[in-house]
Length: 114
Image (cartoon, rainbow, N blue to C red):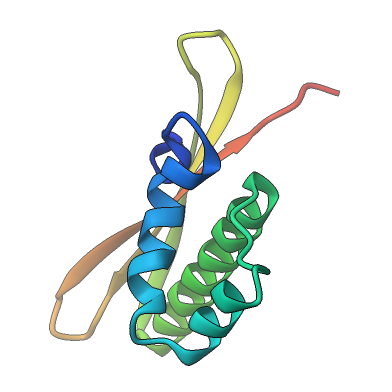
């Protein structure tokens, strides 16, 4: 989503997300009804809202999985990208009693200098 793949296309009607929704409307009564009533929305702000819901859901899932583990640590590292913007990478590393280690990358956060 960060690469804009979901909204690529000359128009909203040709974008990947619109085509994906059209495909899903075949079996989804709600989406099919929206198409019939000409209220099928594919605006970029809707895609942004969908992305925020996905990220929030993934973060909640990561939090619940982390709290189930016996041991965990937060790994944060600050660096700058190619355009010299400071960013913070955020990972959660967990370990069970059987020494099984997993590391989940949560994402990059922009760091503004105050």
